[in-house]
Length: 243
Image (cartoon, rainbow, N blue to C red; front, side, top):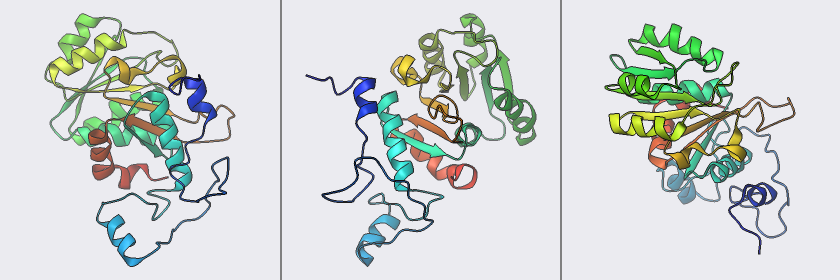
C-alpha cells in the first residue's frame, strides 16, 4: 500500500480542496486569472467576511490556485498551514516584521541570503530593531546571542558558502530563550529537510528557486502553525506580502 505521507505521494496527488468545482472537476488545479470572486449567497459572503470560513474574495489576498499551492507546501513541510507571497523577500519581510517592533532584538546567522542580510542590516535598524549576526555553527555563540532576543533567523545550507548547521539544536536554543525561530529552507527544499519537524517555528521558501524549478516563477511561502500564520496574516501580509 502506498504511504500517503511520503513526499513522492504528496507530490503526485494534487490537493484540490481549495477548489469547490464538484464532480467532473479538473485533474490538475487550474490557474485562476481573475481579481475578484463571487459568493453563492449573501449569507455565504457574510460568513467569509466574519472569518467563519475561508474563500477567495480578491486575488491579492486569496486565490484558489495559490491556496492549492499553500496546501501542498504545508503538507510537504509537515505544518498545519502555509501562506503564499509575491516573492521570497515578501515572505521574509512579512514574517520578520510580524514578530518584531521597535526596541526588539533579533539574531540571524551570517551568510544568509544577501537581500535578507541587507534587510536586517539596513532597514530594521531604521525601525528601531537591533540585529546581531552569529556563526550558526557555533552553538555556544547562538545560545549567548539569542538570550533576550525575540526572533532567531536561520538558514541551512546557507547562501553562497553553503554552511550546514545543527537546525534542531538551534531551534531548541530559541525555544529555551522564548524566541520565535524562522528558517529559509529554499536550498534544501522539504524533500531533503523539514525543519518544522526539528522544532523550527516557521519555514520560509523562495519558491522561485527549486520549488518552481524552471526559472518561470517568482513566489514565496511561509509554513508553520496556524497561530503564527494568523499573526502574519493579520499584521503584515495585507501590506507587504500581497500576490
